[in-house]
Amino acid sequence: MGFRKWVSFVLIIHLLNSCLISSSSSLTSNGFSQIPSKFLALAKRDDFFDWMVGIRRKIHENPELGYEEVETSKLVRTELEKMGVSYKYPVAVTGVVGYVGTGQAPFVALRADMDALPMQEMVEWEHKSKIPGKMHACGHDAHTTMLLGAAKLLKEHQNELQGTVILVFQPAEEGGGGAKKIVEAGVLENVSAIFGLHVTNQLGLGQVSSREGPLLAGSGFFEAKISGKGGHAALPQHAIDPILAASNVIVSLQHLVSREADPLDSQVVTVAKFEGGGAFNVIPDSVTIGGTFRAFSTKSFEQLKKRIEQVITRQASVHMCNATVNFLQGEKPFFPPTVNDKGLHQFFKNVSGDMLGSENYVEMQPLMGSEDFSFYQETMPGHFSFLGMLNEAHSAMASPHSPYFEVNEELLPYGASLHASMATRFLLDSKTSSPNKSYNEKDEL
Image 1: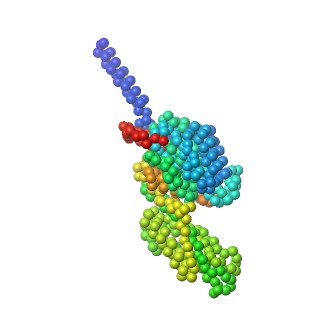
Image 2: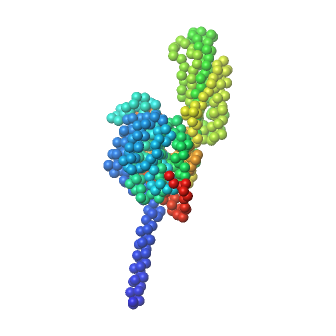
């Protein structure tokens, strides 16, 4: 073989090897960055979008309260079965936990809450709640729909998953602590990370917001019965007025934050319930008050709890009344603060940036709202974020827990694809960062 022919042969072999290496390395960081935009394009297909809208409207028409999500979980199971996605049911009473992928480690979880609120919907539209006194006023119908959308995207690309995605359709977020029951059920053992999303009308469509570290406050509830002695309103000297006592209790409770808390340590005490008496001229025997308290640190939270009880019982005694305080932990467990893992937050910014552009990430300040997603974060790294739905071409949207709350259904593809992208990229990152890691027999479903 002549010299020139030999050189040509060597060049051809080199080029072939380069092509093979390039082909086998399609899941480089550049390949990873394309995943979110591809998922978003798929979720925006007319047939996919219409399917999600239909599901969301079915759920919205039939709202169910915490641990009563019978029909909602039935709808979820039906859709998972159509996709060929395996699941466990019941989990935590009415919860559903689905599985997509290899069935082997690594495991990553995605969570959506399913429950509605006990309030009457005031929005007049074709798919208004059909259940009097119940409404999806916090977007959980959209959350459930977006996770089903993610399940569909992931199932269609199951062969590309480098591990297992666990789909958590959770009951009873609104005070019932459904996340705590999910954790206690043991279905999330060996999970490396969990992600959750919440819709918000404070961000534009296609924007996301979050932060590392403390995001949402820990929260608890309290209820107190203040008992006096009933009598005629015209003869208060013969009665012991529990309404007056309760009024002074409420004022005194506000001093816990304004005069006892460090101004740089955010805390809240709100009395939102006051029940007592049924006539204009009768002093009742007793009244009931109730409310919530919030804090970002365990120390502050426990101090608030202690002082709330002291203030209520001692202020009542000043007015010659008796008081009992119930913190309702049996039915409304205390929620820990929601604290985002630092590494997962950077990962979220990378993935959402690849999908939406880094300019559509908004760094948020901590909020005094609470989320039972925090129970997951106590047992594994977790990340919670907010997904915008505000369309500036339309009028301002009502806030969550308002009877006029609405969901801009254009956000559904964004949530579905962001969920799917987070899970897919996390599994790929786990594999590439630890390519030689071997998983033992326990690291399987």
